[in-house]
Length: 123
Image 1 (tube, rainbow, N blue to C red):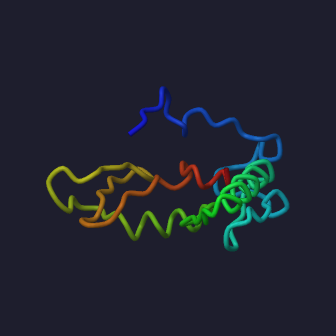
Image 2: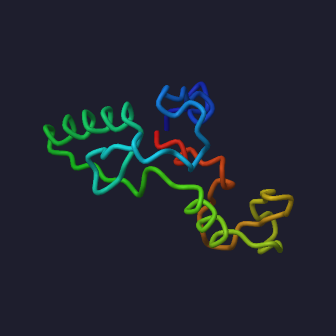
Image 3: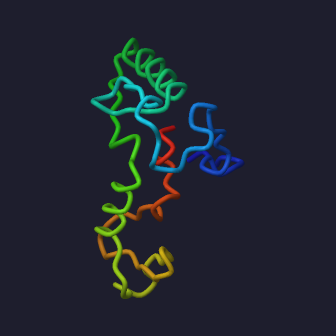
């Protein structure tokens, strides 16, 4: 496994199209199809995804994704499905959101606290 010298989610430079917008609350006109299913991304990221997909396809590789842009409302729904307000098992992942403690439910993958998701930037 390759270890990156940085945490990618910490080094994101937001394109000018989304400056001043909030995570998960991007204007519809900045979101463009990215070439995978019906997913959308901010234009520079969508353009890069198209190029990556085209290069992969030319080499016989089919790319897929589990999702791209996630609205704030979708982030809340996902978080509330995956976390609960009481510890679910010893050592369960713990988050604080809206001034309350939340613990990851057993057997589900984690999710970002709403408003902090990388997917909320459509990048």
